[in-house]
Amino acid sequence: MFDQIGKIIFDNEIVATASDFNMGIEVEMHRVNADASLSTSPYPSAIGSQRKNKYIKNDFLQMQTEIITPTTAHSIDAMHYLMQLNDTLRNELAKDEMLWALSMPPVLPEDKSEIPISDVDPEKKEYYRQWSKIHGIESGIPTGVHLNISINQQVLEAVWWNVRNEGTFSEAEMIHHLYEKIVQGFIRYEWLLTYLFGNSPIAEKNFFNDNEGPDHPVRSIRESHFGLGNKLKGDYSSVAHYAQGIQNGIKTGELLNEAEFHGSIRFKKNGKSIDEALKSGVDYIELRMLDLDPTTSVGVRTSTIRFVRMMLTYFMMTPALTESTKMPEFLAEGMYMNENVALENPKSKTQYQAEGQVFLDQLQDFGATIHWGPEYQEVLEMMQNRLDNTNLTPSANLTDHIQNGSLVPYALQIGARYQSRAHRNPNPFKGFADNPEMPVTELKQKLFDKSNQPVEYKE
Image: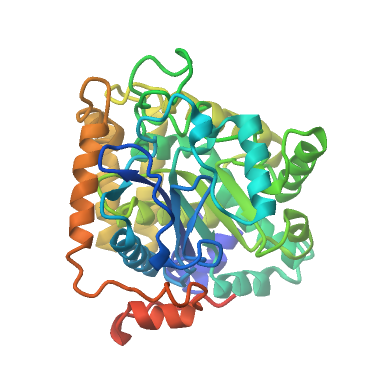
């Protein structure tokens, strides 16, 4: 079951450490008015300068907020930050504002050029303007959840200590090998995540031009080719091929810069370009394939994070899914499968159910071998139920709330409920008005009691 790396992790009794990846969470949501129109209210002044606050900021558009948690050593702590920051934002919105809980936006104006681009620094604003001219504002308006994930340093050190004398890898190549296995697994099984968590079945009025969108509810518009940004496909067969693909895209004009690449996953280097990662190793990966979950005020459930962690651990500790020479075709097939699943009817059985069952069985066997706890068994059983009964999937549930071809009534109902709940907080955090550039150590002290403070991630 294990490959060499998995055996090192297992034999060194660091499976629990290996399974608890460092994680930061980004959640995008739109500010909307009580009538479901995009908000024109200014960025909440009590959050502090939108150009300085690194935890709550605007994204591409002025009403498109993004909550960015600190990176934590335990993924559950990132969820704690997310809940506190989400509550902070909601308490500072204008009186008639709320956060839109769906990945697909509310009804857009007929003239989309009326939607204001975010008030960021001049250089970035000019980039946004160029991007919108090329792709159209509607390509950047769907929202979702991004997970920034890195492997625990103790795990990297243990693996390197055991393979350093073999002459197979340099340390950077060893790091790349681990992240490549993980990323390749997610690209191959992205379709399963789309089936299990896809949550954008329809688009509201004026998102599509003329009849260009799907003619029936689907699992995830955002995860299909109708979704985000540029259409350049990432080459995930290696970090080097990924970097070369982006460089070529910039040279041919398909990309304005590296940040414009909107693939499902990004290899990342802290504060530096992907070219730098080729020299010293990737620092983390960014998973970008999760729709917002409207059944929770923060946009993503702990059970979803746990399932992603199970997949991360499995891909890291087991052999590569196919031979390296066959990897490009293998990954291309995974992308093709994801497109098909994204556009399936949410109430229909997926065409890849047999493949999904094989994978869930493999996860079950793997979990039994490394002794996952009952909370993970519960998550596996939840996913098994969704695979067995498509009516239990989020997208199928969401279609039950469609009224006259729209989800606006449902989104307004739950949005108002989440706002009301946030306003019940007797002591909402107010510290960003005076200190939007607050360091993580201070933020942690102000948001949490000493007994439940998150464990900081050490770079």
